[in-house]
Amino acid sequence: MNDFPFRLGTSSYIIPADLLPNAYYLAGKVRDIELILFEVDDGPNNLPAPEVIEELVQIAREQDLTYTVHLPLDLKLGDDGSEQDISLAKAKRVIDCTRGLDPWAYVLHLDGRSVRTSTDATLIARWQDHSVRALEIVSEWVGGAEKLAVENLETYPLDFIQPVLDRIPVSRCVDIGHLWLDGHDPIPYLQAALPRTRVIHIHGIAERDHRSLAFMPQEKVRVVWDEIIRVKYAGVLTLEIFSEEDFLSSMDVINTISQNQSKPSR
Image 1: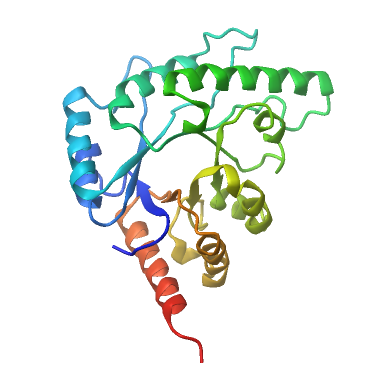
Image 2 (image 1 turned 45 degrees about the vertical axis):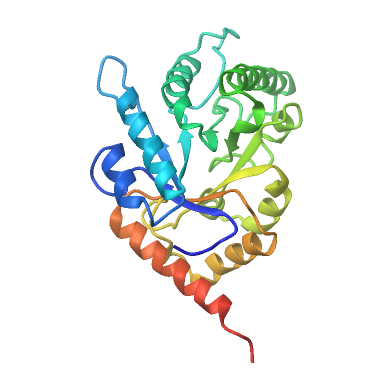
């Protein structure tokens, strides 16, 4: 495994199997696994049972692994300001069942779909107040605001979540793939966010996002990689992809870039 200053990781859906087979497959290849958990109302879920948590903890101890947990729904209060929204209820269940893993971070989205294109200052201020309150609630459940990593989303204005972040000391999750998808240069955004960044997501763009880095021009990947290495980023860098083929080809890209960096200049 490469000796990067950060913890290189990927998602828990690399091989077509449950959490434990993926953890065993990835152990020794990465240093963090992002657990993608879901819970369908009155339907299936993959929330880990206590015995699965115990085995994941054991794998982590033996393989120097950490876990990040992606909360299942975009976080918000109810439309009437109620603190009983389903996104909070599902977040609580995921947090309760994964607490034993002592996750590196809980990654989450803020649900701003209703106001992301609005020019109504009152409506926007109300959304910001509700978002801060939702984050305060979840911060108490996870043991501190720094454990929450709020992610930037595609199709949202670049500074959309900043007024919320200015009011509560949560961490950041910078998703490079979302910035690429919207045609943004990720470097200025990354530079501004890095002091609070606990997790970085990176993935390529093909017919959709969350594909192999091999689909990206290597120079684009290299520029981001150089910036992360340059500042000695010590958080988690997640290859947020969902197949073995995309994982292996992404690792090939990373190994090529890393080997080129290590060659002495002439």
